[in-house]
Amino acid sequence: MSARLHALHAAGQSLWLDYIDRTMLSNGDLTRRIAEDALTGMTSNPTIFEKALAEGSAYDEQLATVEAALSDREAFFVLATTDVRNACDAFRVVYDRTEGQDGYVSLEVSPDLARDAAGTVAEARRLWQIVDRPNLMIKVPGTVEGADAIRQLIADGINVNVTLLFSVEAHARVIEAYLAGLEQRAGAGLPVDKIGSVASFFVSRVDSAIDKQLGGMGDEAMALQGKAAIANAKLAYRLFQASFAGPRWAPLAAKGARVQRPLWASTSTKNPAYRDVIYVEELIGPDTVNTLPPATLEAFRDHGEVRTSVTEQVAEAERALAALEATGVSLQTVTDTLLAEGLGSFEQSFVTLLAGLARKRAALAATA
Image 1 (cartoon, rainbow, N blue to C red):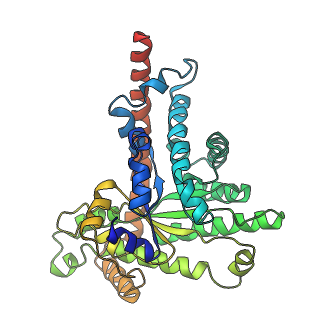
Image 2: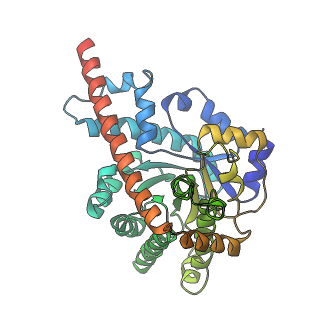
Image 3: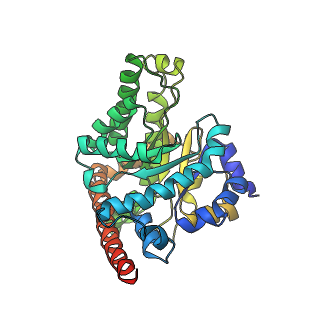
């Protein structure tokens, strides 16, 4: 049992594993982590699946049974929905124990739908029906079009993980979409007490991008290195607290609606000069989720320190971001760029994944 991981969970932060592969689903590793490590959820994305499918032969047996008439995209979702369904079943004990507050597994819509609200809704509904588990979350990018899709999916009663959020403004947009979707559903006389949602706010990539710009600007500017990402996330958490309180939220809460929890994503440390668990330690607080890659999870198990940190020094966070703007570095420009790069990266991973899948299908067909 990991005392540090359990202490983190006791501080109000859910630990979700930012990784999935078929081997860990079948060899007992995931079940052990749920029992021993306070692990309460799992996320996937095209890059994770690309790596899982490219390594080894764990998927070959099922892939050999996929109908040849199916496209490579359709074949991928046959494999992915199988993994996610099995992961949902593993986490069902958490989902039931927490009465639906936790125990979710995320599956992302195709990255090339990021600017297509109608296409996102259609694919999300299809994946929701295929997996057919109450603790599935459909991952939708936090674009303008994604926000339109989120409102409709929440109104449909589908759990949503909003991904690729880098700015507080984008976070505000998806909170609005979530609230509007709940209001639409409640207005239709449908229940809102079984819907789960998280807003995945990316952290370390912000520092990586900004630190490059600050390098060589002088001591005052360089003193801001490593400050922006955590400050940005703390302001997002403040927005979360304000949004899920007051007269708009009260009638939804009275019907049992759940808050849309902030999820800290991209929490592995990219700069070796920084503490390897800094993006976990500095963003701990109630109603938060941290999705950790395996290496970051192991590092926190070994030497992570727990305190309620996400509400500390918020005014200082504002000053740090103001000082950043004063150097000529635009946080908005950086976060817009990171969103575009994130969308492009996931789409490229998906293209690479499908190409690899095509080669593997051809090889399996040749040996059949």
